[in-house]
Length: 207
Image (tube, rainbow, N blue to C red):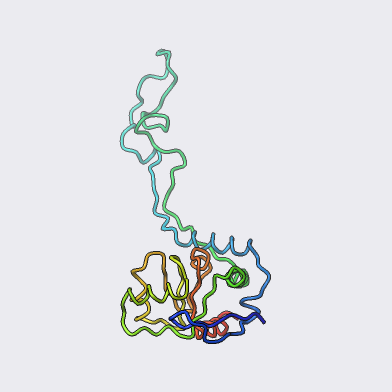
């Protein structure tokens, strides 16, 4: 089983932890990660874009000139797509972009990203994340102590209001409970900072 060092919030090594092989030592599937990230981004789309077709544009009810005898190409409306102010061909309309991917594929993508984080030394495990006050200054000190960089994904076992309020103002840093982590957020952050209890929660929820 893979092992990882456990740090405290001062960046000191306080032990080691054996990680679950299913979560952190699986065969990496880039295709599964791609499909799940694409799905998440599609599900985020509002789908409210809209433009008018030639039947919806104001005006154009009268034939601009007679059919024959002018030497010009025949026209039926000045709101045809090739006219300035005309309608849009195949105009986009509001629609739902969301779709579902199989649960096994989502799990495979999650296992792949977690394994990749471990292999690329982008996983930081903390013994706990207990802060005295909800201050951004303290949160920055923690990230600097564990060498988490500027784009960190902080994961706790449960929703922790104090931790959230401490980290929320740091640009590039997001906070989530273990049961709510997702592939897209894991991919777009350079470091995964997770507590020991949160790893136990991952095993409980996702295996």
